[in-house]
Image 1: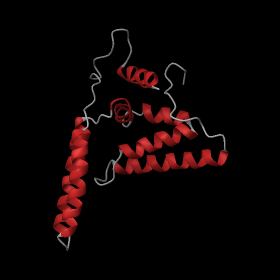
Image 2 (image 1 turned 180 degrees about the horizontal axis):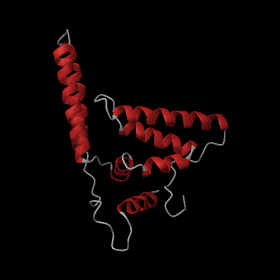
Image 3 (image 1 turned 90 degrees about the horizontal axis):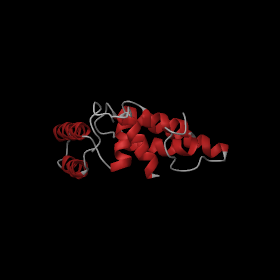
Length: 162
């Protein structure tokens, strides 16, 4: 990648080969858990991908850049990093997933305390999710007049933040 489109690094790359490998392993494990989280309602995706981005920043900035440029996960990560924002579709998916999970717990629990505790935790997470802003970036068809894409603008914004 050229310097113009490279993302800012969170931390310098580890000099120790052992530490670098450990950060790399943590990054891959977090990406794996994030991918699994796309289909399991109780396992979050974005926090694991944020962890992976941080681990890759310390072990392989090229992998971090690749993660931020991924068409599926990149926009979520960029929105969260630049604005602390969660897209409306992601909010809806999280709330629906938590509701379905709670319903399953409520129907299958042998003790009434279990759904109460699970519901309390899920309600707290739901409040947090709902109170996060939605991304303010323009729709993909609204590219800048100078030929810059929305992704390039997001990358530039990230570079300017650091």
